[in-house]
Amino acid sequence: MRTKSIIFSFITAIILFLIQFPSSALAHNYSASYTDLKIEKDQTIMKFSLDTISVIELIPGIDKNKNYLLEKSEIKSGRHHLEELITERLALDKNNIEQTPKLEKMKLVKKTNNIFLTCYLIYPSFSPGENISLTDGLYSGDSGTTNYVNLLTATYQGEVSETALQGKDRTWTMLLTENQQEQQTMDGQNSQSHSEEPAQKNTSKSSSSWLSFLKLGIFHILTGYDHLLFLFALLISRQTIKQYIGTITAFTIAHSITLTLSVLGIVSIPSYLVEAMIALSICYVALENIFKKKINYRWAITFTFGLIHGMGFASLLKDMNLPKSNLAVALINFNLGIEFIQLMIVLLLIPVLLKLQKSMKYQRYMQIGSGIIFILGFIWLIQRLF
Image (cartoon, rainbow, N blue to C red):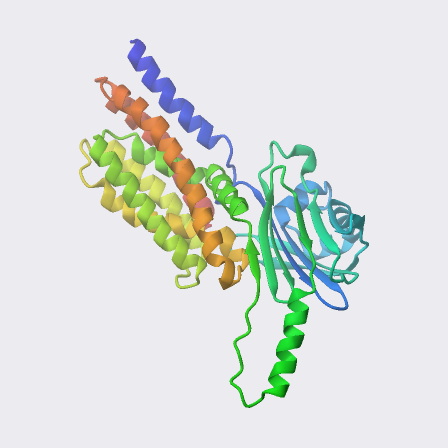
């Protein structure tokens, strides 16, 4: 009787943990923004995009008709509050002195998974030798409960820097130098003096914070409740160690393939279809757990659905539009973050599951748990299709 209670409590606790968070059709329950900073000779242009659900959360009352959609009329009437939010929570400093921007325009833009409010701000120019820094203070009061990330890309004289501002690491800094400008001037002079010589290929400096993308991958999978539920559904059926290894390996290889192909733009499927197929994968595996007494080739179906999940993982990096020079570093570390968390989950769950599977009643409780998983996956499927 004690073993039955432990099995039921364990499966129920995991499912409740996974289902208590998501209440919408969103694939990943977090808030995301994108900042594109161009430091030019005469001015500095910032394009800041924040998902509209976050805007509604941050400015109570802006969604006047309570339909959870930010409309053009609401942007117009709430322009003052929007400008106040952006200019007060985003601080662009020159040598530790905050700069005052001019808000040029705001408009709604559709990205991979969501509708974003994009704001165009103009700041004064920066000069070589000066230090530029950006601090993001959005959700600073409840950073422990809100999974917020700002994906930043900054460009200065051919040098590109990108990072993910998240958690307590909310400040990006860059020291502007004359090296790139001098090199470009020399290149121009040389091309005029030696026009008969073949033109040399221009190269640009680039930098990428590998740690920020590693952490981004970690947060991405931890807030991807549908992916976690799919992984749990895969693991709770009776399997041997060899079968577990095959299942996890198949999932890892498959989602790594489509994550890479999607970010590179080689594979592209509408996001609503990807999210719907992810929900469908949860339903299928749950039904397989319920009706199949013995599952011999789970690795094969796992590989198939893993290809779909990889495209879901790719959404953040695709919207960031990373330059090719930095794409490899960002992609590798983002995927490593995902794999790290997945491995930790597997190492924690499998020993417990193997022990619980010795009980004669395990199959029954696993079927009950799978039934709950199916219901949740089906709700997500309907939401994402309609």
